[in-house]
Length: 312
Length: 269
Image 1: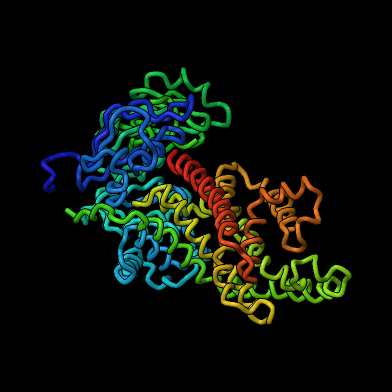
Image 2 (image 1 turned 120 degrees about the horizontal axis):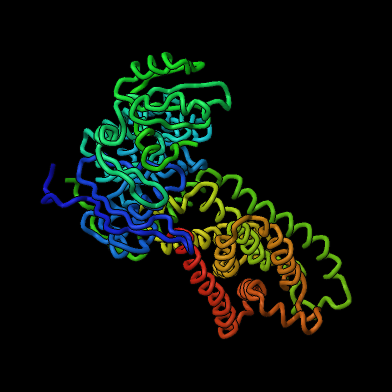
């Protein structure tokens, strides 16, 4: 996968970030290798964005060690940022400029000549399927289109690492799939992707490997499928009882499946065979209003590790 | 592996990129801007020059009160400095907030090889240019009148621009440091408008009580007004001129240092 002598592109040891009395990142270790797609999964406030800003060489590291391309962001910030692409949580597009000029001026920030920058902008607008919107204003664009403009902008300097902070939050399902497709293509072209998300489906779709963060710490690490296999039985039976009656079902369901979780709106039964578990529920006379068997997901892993749901 | 971009060479390079961004935005709005910076002073000059001027010039102290100048000749060059001050202070308020909060422009720039300090330098370079443009608009109007048609309008434009950034440099630090924009209108109402009225643009400051003269001499705008008026009418002595300019530069430098500090803190959290 390259000429880096196996050295990771990003390397963090005991990484910390403190704001006054509040410690947002409490000593985390991780490595990202070239060509990999790496994710930080966690709820709001887990420390994902703080970590991303340190990786982006804009936010000073409070403690521990961080290296990108073997360089220290404290001393080589400019050189590091020259090789990164950043997709911030908010698009931060310039509404005074049209779509193409948003990209062209961004290219200038990297000292790319105007002619070269315009050429690159056109190429990238084609890549994000917005070539017909080059001279459009920003305002009338949909959320998904703005996001694609932002992604095109982040690619102006041909970055080796693309940092994406919650790339699809707030987008409708169709727009998300278009975006995922483009990101997948980038990955195929060899761009290293580092992203944060609180959507487990996004993490499963996009990440080769991820860490699950909770309250500033890493609670699990691995490829999505492996995390699910290790931390959760294969299937989940979701049972819905009348409002407020979920907790009462506890005794009746005892012993079914590997374990159970009672959530405010439903009861989850973890089992390798969900259908068999459901038959057992019916046999015991604890029939729910509705039931559904699904595959275990990262959401379940998160619930298992932290006792809380991801999106609340 | 993608080729690494070469390590940065010039000191001003990244700041010039920030300047270019302002220029690109200005290209979209320059028509209304240029119109404003010519029409507004034209109205001032005509309204005050003809109206107040006819009163003053026919008055009993016409020979001595204004250093031998007509009222129009007295106040018209000063409008260059006050216009630059008004336009640049406005630019130092809401647009700065826009860069941090509404559009995130500064955060975008900071994500590239541009540092927080480069952003401040770039913004101030733009303010200097904007000061030249707005005072230049007034100069164009003054070219229409016999009493102020002189090549000395050129240095006056530069002096006016420096009077403007003597205000905007510290104000940029102030507005960047605010959590909200609630204080901005008060800056205009209680700082800029009084400075405009008591700047010595409309009457000699020896008309003011002694303590107010002292206060006026401390405001950068008075120095800007003295520079513009003096150079246009050829009465500016070198030592005085250097003193006025140095005083403006002190405000600029202090404001620049403070702004760098605030921007570095805000963009590096």
